[in-house]
Length: 363
Ligand SMILES: Cc1ncc(COP(=O)(O)O)c(C=O)c1O
Image (cartoon, rainbow, N blue to C red; front, side, top):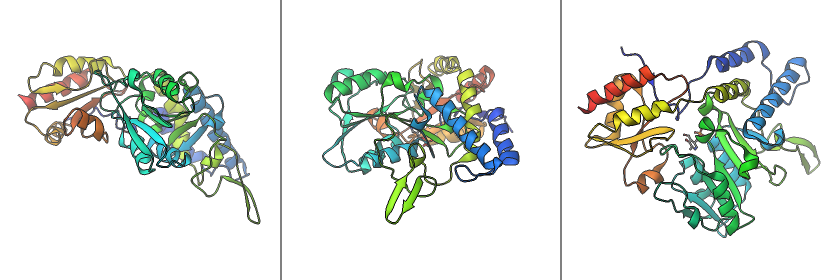
C-alpha cells in the first residue's frame, strides 16, 4: 500500500501534536463544564475558555474578548449572522461568485434581495463597480481560486455607496495564510473555523465589532442572567450568543492551533512548484494562479471524480468536485475542479511524488 499523501489542507488541516496533546490532557485530567460550576475543576475550565477567547481576539486584532463568539464553525457563524440581522425583501445583500455555499446561502434563505458583485478579469472584486449594499458579504479568499482579496478596499468602496453598510467577512481560507486585523479591515463580522488552522472540527470563531447591537437567535442555557416572572434578562456578549454547552474539548485545542499556524504557515512555494510542473501536462488547464494558496485545475476528457478516484488509489488525497463553491465554477463554465492544497506538514518529496502519480494517470 502506498503511503498517504494528504494534499487537502484547505478542506481540513491535519492536527499538530500540540493540539492533540491539549485535547487529550483536557479530556483526561481537566474535564468539566464551563459557565456553570463553582468547583475548582469547573472554574479552571472557565479560565481556559476565557484564555482561548483572549488568544483568539489577539489573533485577529479584536479589541476585547467580548467580540469573540464561539460557534460550531464558519457555516454556523454565517447562519447566525443572517438571522441576527433580521433581513427582509427590502434589504440588499451583496455577495460574489467567490462565495462558498456557507457564506451566501444563509442570506439567500433570509429572503433579502441578493445582488452579485461583479468580478474583474483577475477574479477579484471589481472595485470600480461595487453595488449598493445594506449587507456586504466578502469572501476574503476563495477556496477554489485561493487569491487574497483586498478586504479593506472592498469595505471602503462599499461604504462609499452606503456609509451604514454591514460588512461580513468569510475568513475561512484567508486566516490560514495571512494575518488578520479586524480593526484595520473595519468589518462588522468575520468568521473562520478552527479545523482549517489545525484546531478541531465543531468550533468556529465569529467576530462581532459591536456585540451589544444584536439580539440573540439561539436560546437556552448559559445565555440567561435571570428570569423573573415573564421578564428575561440575558447575559451580555459573548455568552448571550452561545446558548448551550460550548465545544470545550475543541476550545482546549484552539490555543495550540493558533500558536502553531502563526509559527508555521503552509509553504506556498510547494504550490508554485506543482503549478510549474502540472502546467506542462498537455491535458491540464489550471484555473488558479501561480501565487495562489491552492492549485485548482481541470483535465481534458476526464471527469474530476474519475481523477479523484485514480489519484486516490495511489494514496494521494486531493479535493474534487464543486468544493461547495458552485458559483465560481458556473462563472468559469466548468462543472467542477480538482484542488490541491498544502499544510505546513507537507514536504517537497510528497509533492514530487504526487506529481509523478498525476503524470502517470494523465499520460
Ligand atoms: C471559504 C470557505 N468558507 C466557508 C467554509 C465553511 O467552513 P465550515 O465547513 O468549517 O463551516 C469553507 C470550508 O471549506 C470555506 O473554504
